Image (cartoon, rainbow, N blue to C red; front, side, top):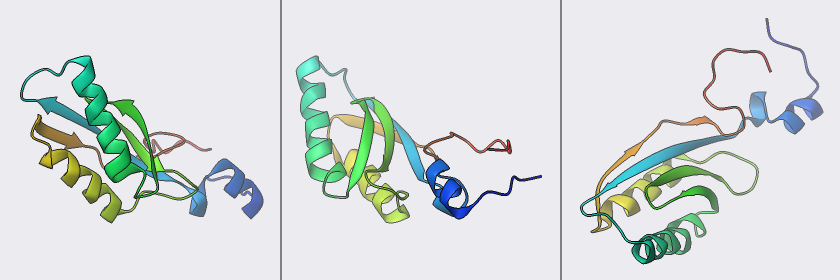
Amino acid sequence: MTKKRSRRLRKKLRVGEFQELGFSWEATFKTPLNPEQSEILVDSLLSEVIEPEGLGFGGWASGGFVVGFKRGSVSEFQREDVLKWLRSRPEIDEVKASGFVDAWYGQDDGAER
């Protein structure tokens, strides 16, 4: 049984039609990166794809979580742009990504919120 909540409360809690989705990714490298190479990779990721797409990123060179910077979800197009950019990098051997998950509450386990 789901709880009845007002539109205002659903928006505040980011549930229902206000749910925000993101995705996680994980990369493996052809050779281990030193700290300077990792920093260059993350700076490039942020300036070339995350910021221009209006996204937010938490993580580091080997993986992280991508969300919309403002309210809203990451689109499939934005997700593909991030993954395409990561796969084009010469230092990255493989990239694995999750499907979309609730950015505020994690994987939907059917629990009431």
